[in-house]
Image (cartoon, rainbow, N blue to C red; front, top):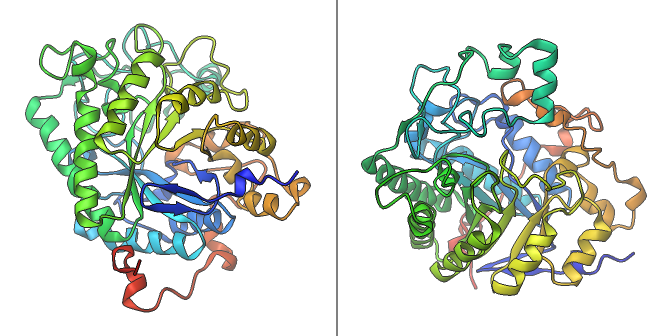
Length: 425
């Protein structure tokens, strides 16, 4: 099979991507509790960029100082000028390795729930969060297994030093919401200054911003709660601020967004998501990156079924003019078919890149039989974001720094290549 569609270039806003594969943003963070770049972080992403993907979405990167007290694992930061040198090195490495670097920026972590830093969590509404009813007992298969073997009070289950019971969240104030938007916009300018070709707004996976969309978790009485319009307001304001800030620094920046598709148990449905997607397109978003709803999914959603989100992206393609990225399409034949039939524009994966950083190159070279396939065992998540990342299929994962193959020793030359905005048309 030639996979012609998978290797067709595509334009995302002002940015050209060489093929239809994207690395889906992941948080491994490699022990950077100080928020600064480290050599293993660089090597891991450089390896995946060398492997042939057209688009490397690096994230989620913490974009506000406001969010720091709510960290429950290491993050890389992008909210101060001191963070720019390391981020600039990452953008340069990805570009030298052959991929387009886009940074995914996350305003505030998943703060509602466990508290092990002595800071009360925040949420759209007081007392609500991912550990509150009806979500309190909704846990992944992996966490249930840990509960059975080690007990619910295990640090492996709850996080180092965490309390046995969740800490009720307080309601985020209006002033704090504006602070988050302002600091996030500043991060978008820093990302452009660091040399990334684009910014992706993280508004998914039950982190603070995405919970504003969920009426079960957002019972505010002000302009950010209640109606669908009000619950979507924070996402739209963040997107607008991101577009303005990034493109003011570099007009050639692409700005995308990643949203949850559906959320179960009195959450929101796909029709609401489609309406929000159209509003984001009208604002000027350059691409839409689909994803599941974190823990809060539809009961019949078969999460391990390859391409289970294509049924949604196919409908999004009918109403959107901007490119749509669909995650978790591991089978190249299915990915080729989906793009050929107009069900999506790009496919994003993380776990398959973990198992085999070279899989896109192997596919292009006709070596499909040599691809080391992800078995979806989820060992990559079992090590925890504190302990690092593991992969049964690829023992080098998390130790790429020790392989000279991924050491880029020569950078760009000439001012025109040091920053995308300086390149000639």
